Image (cartoon, rainbow, N blue to C red):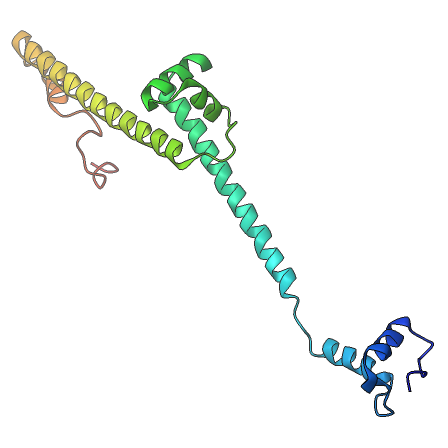
Length: 188
């Protein structure tokens, strides 16, 4: 009963050894081929490949996000550092962010590949403080300029209001573009 082995395939002979029912006359050699044909004809999708495509795009998206954070941190260090040499910028940014100089230096030169969240938050808070201070400084400078304009207008009024009338009117108005709503900037 086990003496019958097909000589054309070592794989088929191995299958015949494993399965005694395979040696029955109802099990022709073409049944294996028909099984393979059935599997192939049912159009099985390669989900593994599709998963791989998504992983690549996710990886690329992750790398884009990492590079964006690196760029954000490098530009933030330059903003916090202000004008001057790289060393001066790093020292100023380290004081502003309250972080060690070496960490700021590595952020500036994009040496940290994956910026930890606590470092990113500390830098973002320092930038927010810097922006608030800059806004406060700008408001103060505007107030000083308005006071100087008012003083100059008063002095011109004392000298000769008829001669300096247009200049007094211009100085009496607020500075152009200041205190206006965005709707009025384009026209009047």
